[in-house]
Length: 95
Image (cartoon, helix red, strand yellow):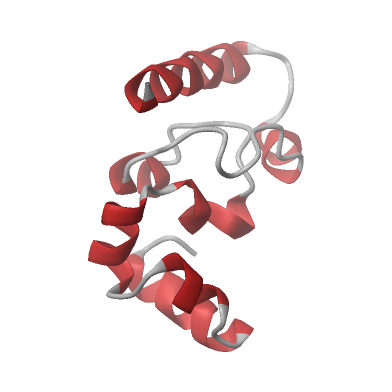
């Protein structure tokens, strides 16, 4: 099921990249809410999927990938102060 969602998101990304919408505008408007699709770290780092909330990239990861990347559960990450979250995302290459 998750692979199917990722495939749909990739297809959406291809369609979005060929539209007349500029990438800056597409990046500013998140049309794919976190939790609706699961993306890989590689997809997030490469910017392969348009329409995601760029300030919340980490929320598109599954739990296993998230814990492997950040060394903590999503619930624990959510409790961190913003500056610590930002620092962790920079180190992970998701900022």
